[in-house]
Length: 166
Image (cartoon, rainbow, N blue to C red; front, side, top):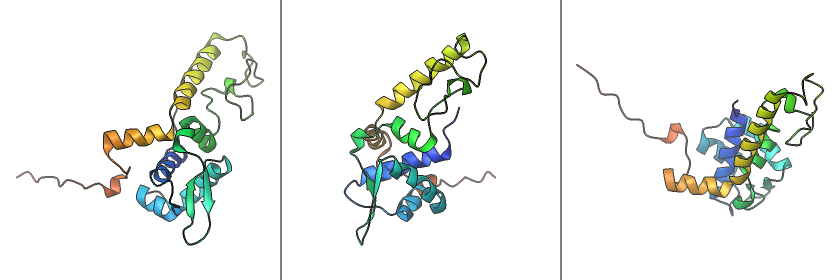
């Protein structure tokens, strides 16, 4: 299972906004800093806005800002806004936006009487538990302590020259 670039870029955009919570950032600034296509970022941010994670501010000092304190935004909440519910197998999907489906699922004949389905449910619960405990504030703290601030992409890192062998 993989998180798509939509989830990755959305989290990186939230981190950029979390670094400057009182300042409105333009999508162009975020895209440039993170080396993300502006067009793609423009498709991602509405999901963050409609889920109440970011807000837009108009005017000369406008831009996007976090709608909540970084300590109140969980990675699970952000990924659900960007990717939808985490369902490692179709048998756990009930077609709603809720996180944990009922035991019975019409898409699988064995649903509700299958030990393998219970493994998938345990996986789902474990992953969601980890992501629920992890906040944007914690990601920002880790970034600062382990890698320095701010998070930047490969384009902005210096590239070491490859020595020529003679």
